[in-house]
Amino acid sequence: MKVLAIFISIASLLAGCHCSDDLASSYQFNVTLVQDSYWLYWNFSKTAEEIKFAVRVKTTGWIGFGLSPNGQMPGSDVVIGWLDGQGTHFNDRYATARSTPPIDAKQDWFLTSAKEDNGYTVLEFNRKFKTCDDHDLDIQYDTARVICSWNNEKPTLNSDGTYSISAHTNVGGKHVNLLGGSPDPPKIQDNAGTFTVAAKEARVPNVDTTYWCEAMKLPQAVLQNEKYIVKYSPNITIGSEPHVHHMLLYTCDGLEESDLVSGGDCFDGSVSSRVTACTSQSELLAGWSVGGSDFIYPEDVSFPIGGPNSPQYIVIEIHYNNPNLLSNIIDSSGLIFTYEESPREHSAGVMVVGHEIDYKMVIPPNSPNFTVTSVCSDSCTRQNFPSGGINVIGSMLHTHYTGVGLSLRRVKQTTCDGVTYYEEVKPVDRNLRFDFNYQQTTHLPQPVNVLPGETLMLQCHYDTTQRTGVTLGGLSTREEMCFTILVYYPKIDNEFCLSSPMYDKYNDFVDQHVPDQHKAAFRALVPERSSKSDYQITFDLLEWNKTQIAAFEQLVYTTGTQRSVCPSEIVNTVPSLSCLYETTDTCTGQEPPTCCERINGIEVTASSASALHLCIFLILTAVAVSIFLTGLC
Image (cartoon, rainbow, N blue to C red; front, top):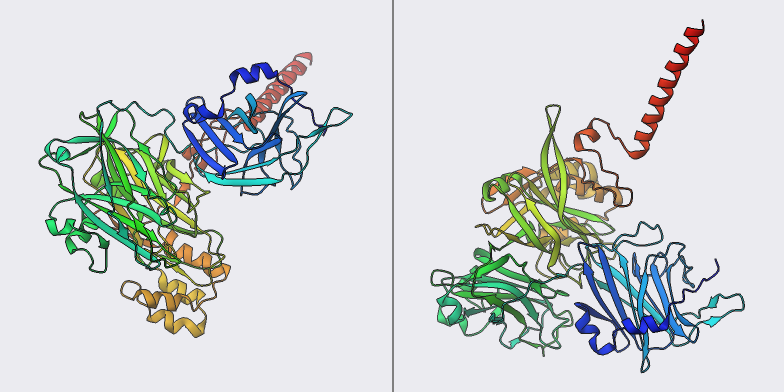
């Protein structure tokens, strides 16, 4: 394909170009893709489903930017642009190999301004979330693999009007949730107040994993009169970024003045049992995880806190990750809360949904996509949710190192011809390109209404191809977790809805998939009573082939019984879905068939409808011809 340069008037571009000094003020979100060299800025509109980018790069050569399915060049959706004496050049391209990507016949990225300024180049451009172009990648509400490149040399003009582009001399990239923030945050009142909850110069132990607990009393102004949190922001100590994995904050009563003196390990006796109990028996105020940014409540929602009859104390639990066993980490990280004096229309709550943090969560090695399923059962939602349900506005999906994807699915019962089936409806949240190093509380595109009687089913996917033994659930980042923290309204008295498998089909797995020489050891394991070390030793006896992995997932997490805690204990099975969620095809406008139509084998698509119309036409034509011939006779 010949390279057809797109020339745009330099004058019009420069008139609309933002200089480097005001890019940060013009764009709500930004990230450094390559330190001291390449900066990305962006805004987006949920209603227009459009995103606007700006890149500022320390070069006067050509600039590349794009989205990748896996962080690599092949398969990427990219743009390349530069300025020279001929004008400004910018093309939507697609990469098929590690070579100059060809120009896309359908141009869906549009340049709006360009400028060279003191050795830097700034390009601004936009595109739709979904372009309906096979060579483009959709921009979704999950973790994007953003890639970038540049060369300090400008492309050279060939005699046939095409350009030769030298290979990049610099590359970079980052995992970014482009649509995870709030694009139109409501204005916060001028008289809003703040308070900070943080560790007080915590000396992080020189061990791999520490859960640090520290208690404080709410500020007097908050205790005297109820306040309404409208925003919270991370405040991470400089230098602690690699070590602060996540933070959870709880409000509680029953602490003593001695509990406020200093913090310590939550579980080794360094803090009182009262402080430890606060992290498991009290209301969750907020959560933050590595890579997260501010969480801003919608304009009609706030989180009430304080007042004379409310809990007086806050406990912050910080998960420190210290794999190099450093002994010189002093940390004062925490969260800054912004509050207003007046309530908003809705009061928010926070709820944890997922798998209990328990070593009974067993993930075999050698699997690129092992799935753990947990359920907040229909009985739990029926018991605890109001008649109008809850409206989820934010979600912080969470796993450890081997997690590669999570999906919080919503399931309801539907009846077709007198038979009841399980149907998946619009999911609450999904990120199938999850990155352990980039977790945040995502603002959902729209509130998701979860009704009483619906089931919430969290599925976590793990890649354990680099592990040689089983991975158990636990607190360490080398162990695993599977949960999400939901921000919702209206607030209800229910802080968690968790489950764990009951291993009721464990013996089937042993009988059918464990070699004879290991059967005795596996039968000696009692799932509900055996220790963590027993689990590790026993399950590591297997080499874990594909058949064993699939059978274990099926018998334990798909068809096996689960115990839900919400907070009452309920035994339930994982719903077997007859209909998966389908949405309207935004490119064709085609509506999906209903669940009952799919179950009954009726699927009227655009093509089948056309075929039906043609069939009717042919039949009518045949009838008309027959009548005509009969008349002749």
